[in-house]
Image 1: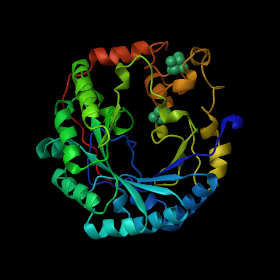
Image 2: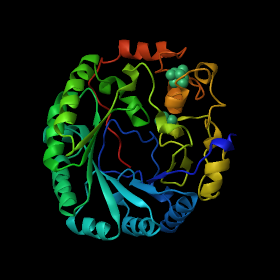
Image 3: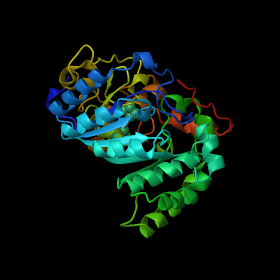
Amino acid sequence: MDLKTAQPPLGLLAELTHRCPLHCPYCSNPVELIARDGELSTEEWLSVLTQARELGVLQVHMSGGEPLARPDLPILVEHATKLGCYVNLVTSGLGLTESRLDDLAKRGIAHVQLSVQGATADRADRLAGARAHDRKLVSAELIRKAGLPLSVNVVLHRQNHDQLAGIIGLAEEMGADRLELANTQYYGWALRNRDALMPTRRQLEEAEPIVRAATERLRGRMEIIYVVADYYEKYPKPCMYGWGARQLTVAPDGNVLPCPASTAIETLEFDNVRDKRLAWIWYQSASFNAYRGEDWMPDTCRTCDRRAIDFGGCRCQAFQLTGDASATDPVCSRSPHREVVDLILATQAKTDELVMRAAR
Ligand code: SF4
Ligand code: FES
C-alpha cells in the first residue's frame, strides 16, 4: 500500500447503467454486462455523489451504457450540480428530446459529449448496429440550441479511418467545440473484434496530415484531440494518468473501479459502495493501492527515465496481453513482452467481420 502518493480524486465516472440502444463492436464495457435489476437505486447514486464530493471530486461524468435510459438522471444531475460539481453527460443522443435536454440544462448539465460512428448515415448506422446517425444530428442541434458546450466523440478503427476527413467536416457542421478522435482501445467487447478493428499502418500514416491540417485550420473554433493507436507506438499511453491517481469509476452495480476497464484484471477484487464508504475504497482498498505509485513496478519501469511520464503504461493491457497486471505494458518497446504486440500486428487484419455488441 502506498498511501503517501494518494491524493484526492478529481473526477468520477458514474456508469449509471450498461443498458444502451447501440451495439458498437468497439464497446469497451465488459463482455458480461450488468442487468437492470443489479443497478444501484436512485438513493444509492445520490449517496455516491455526496460521498464523491466529500472526497474532493469536482467533475462528474454521467455515462453508461446510455445514461438517458435512467429516468432518475435529472435528479442525479441536479444533486451533483448542487454539490458544486461540473456535470458532463456522455451520450449516444438517442432518447434526447428538446424537453429532456431543457430540463437537464436547468438542473445544471454543463457539457455534453455525443458519440458519432462515421461520416455518413449508412456507414455510421452499420457500425452502431442501429438507425442512429440522423437522430444524432438532431441531438447535436438541440444541444447547440440549448447553449451547451458540445464535444463529439468518435472511435476510429480500420472500418471508418477512410472517413476521417468527412468526420471532421461533420463535427464542424454540428457546431462542436471539441472533437475527440480516439483510435480504438482494446478492452472489454472491443478485444473480441481486434482483428476487424485494428487500423493498418498506412491508415495511420494517412490520418496524421489530415488531423494536423484540420487542427491548424480550426484553431480557436474547434479543438481536436487525437488519441493514437498505441499498439503501433514506441511507448505506452499514460493510462488514467496513473492508477488510483485522478479518477474513480463507479460501475452500475456499485463496484468501484480504479479504471473503467479494470474488471478485466481477474486477479483483482473490487469493493462496492453498498458495503464500504467511497473514501475508504479510494484510500485503503487493495484494488486502488495495487498499482498506485511506483513500488509495484517491475525493474524495467522502476529504473526507466519515462516512468513519471507514462506510469508504466496500462495495467489492463498488461494483464490482457501477458496475464500479469504488474508487467510493463507490452506496447512499450522496452518491455520484455513487446514481441506479443508485434505478433498481433503481423498477423491481424484477416477479417472485416464484426461481432456486434449484444443488447442488455
Ligand atoms: Fe514507460 Fe515502463 Fe516503458 Fe519506461 S519501461 S517507457 S516506464 S512502460
Ligand atoms: Fe485500465 Fe489502462 S485501461 S489501466
